[in-house]
Length: 269
Image 1 (cartoon, rainbow, N blue to C red):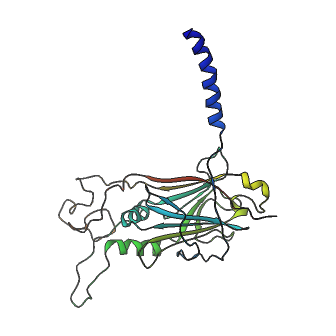
Image 2 (tube, helix red, strand yellow; image 1 turned 60 degrees about the vertical axis):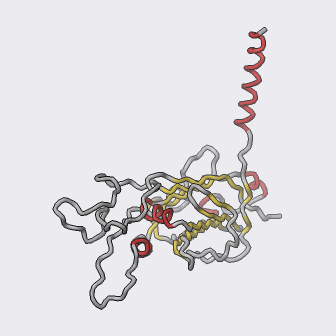
Image 3 (cartoon, helix red, strand yellow; image 1 turned 135 degrees about the horizontal axis):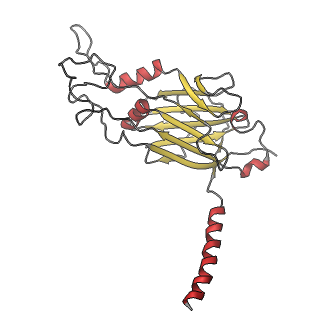
């Protein structure tokens, strides 16, 4: 009797597993972008952000019109902003169900490190920029390129922040010190030039990876004391902000990931 039950159970389990594996992904239709978008590192065109990821402490908005895909990210948390600046961030937009992180953009590129603030000299105004302000400034002044992968008719590798094909990215901070990441991608360079009703069934996957920061070797705490010899570095490296001036490092060595499935908003007769 037990053997008979086992023989009957195994085929049923196999059928259920097959049905589960073939079930469609849950995917939300993104917003239709009705107003003109200016890629300026501000979030004025998107209204309330529809999506939030608690792991990355990130709000985000996705929309499209007949020509472009738009992505806007907003990060209020300063520690998360530090990780994005210091370790870099990858945004992937995969259009094929079997593809994984093949079409994407890296920006910021990473590699920026906080600099120990120098002592204020006589006659110099008070309120010198703190390390976060310095990192923001260095990002905006020094990282003028983005790294592209997998787009149609667009060169892989380093590209200007606005390509001749129309991909454009801008990062800035708003009046509340929230980090704003704004991106536009022409549909023709990512998916297809002309949308049709059949595209309403097509799913794409958004993956955002905030990379893990590699901790420096040495005494616990990372940003600790001067190097051997007693000379404090003048800045630019991983060594030596004074005690009390160190950025919070908790969690920066852990990768954060946002991943969700979506469908384009098709507005055709």
